[in-house]
Length: 151
Image (cartoon, rainbow, N blue to C red; front, side, top):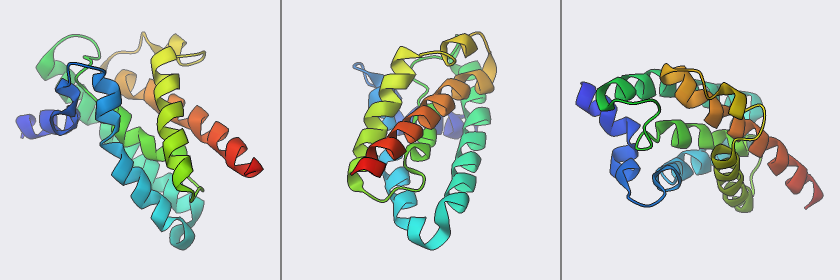
């Protein structure tokens, strides 16, 4: 069971990419985000939010167990935090361009870690691994809504 959890945590192998594992691993979240966008007209933004919250909460123990198995604090090969929070960036949006901008913005904010994200880097375990990606996704969501309100 632990090897299965580790496999999920490393994005089905994408986290082992020698180049930009976080970005490559985030690609796994594109079908999840796309599916969430397709559901929007039927389920609304509130149910989308619940689904995204569940995905985020699932990421916490997955990342925590994998971190203990792999060793070190927030190993770069663990990418479940990236791909399971990516769908947040498209809540309430339907444009395929929102998926692209959400992906790019999510990566920018996860990599650069602007305040308040940077201040959370001291948190350990699965929660510490996921919280920065969660906040990066929320910031990306806000900017996505600003962008697509103008378009």
